[in-house]
Image (tube, rainbow, N blue to C red; front, side):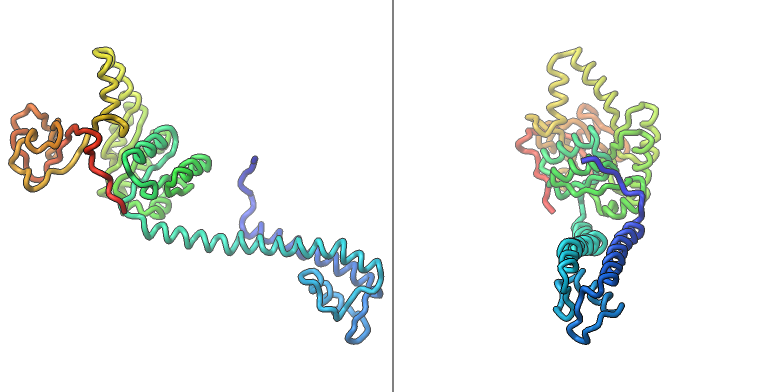
Length: 337
């Protein structure tokens, strides 16, 4: 279906509907007044202008009470062929107006409040293009419930696709504070930003960081020059798909299985998975090799990165994060909310 947003405001649309109803009523009143001799008032026997107004309103909204009735064939045909269809039109337009401007809006606000009330520790995906949709698909594959994923995109077709997956959706501009407040960004567990344009993605990142200072933010940028501005805007992780593709191509040149293995590590459908976690209290003092469930690769300590071959990897400290490779079937399940 071809459609476009109406250029008229809500009040203008409501005014047009009321105007149509009043115009139809005026036309029926005019005909009834001109043909008033074709009607009989069973109360006092005469038809004045007030009786015409009364009969018009009653016949246009109900089937009448029988106190005033048409007595000529012409008047009966007019009521049957003109007034009756107008009565049906009145009912439809009044019901439609009530649904559009009152019932639907009230119901939508009620549903939104219910959804907002349950939004906590959710994943916000700003932008549902190629990268955003792939990210959502991977999250679902990894066991994240669809109701925990909130997709923000200004394009209706993108929102419909995300909604079909069961995600919570909002068709809006993610650069606006009101949009992010509506999806309770401060209560989210993480944010993924892929707006399709680097400047928009960086602005969204800056807005999210302003409203949620502690939330991890992963952002996609396509120009290498924008990686630093993205980090300056507050991005925790900056991903350049062009650079990553180049790494895969270079790796595959050194061995046919390298690119496949990297893809295997990154995908939920692979045999092995990369896992990042904070160490437990009982692991403090152990080496990376002893603490890792699978194969320990590196330690994240403060702002430094420690490889498994370095001396510091022989003793873990409180607060350390470790990255390990583990079999996919042992990967921890995503907790439900």
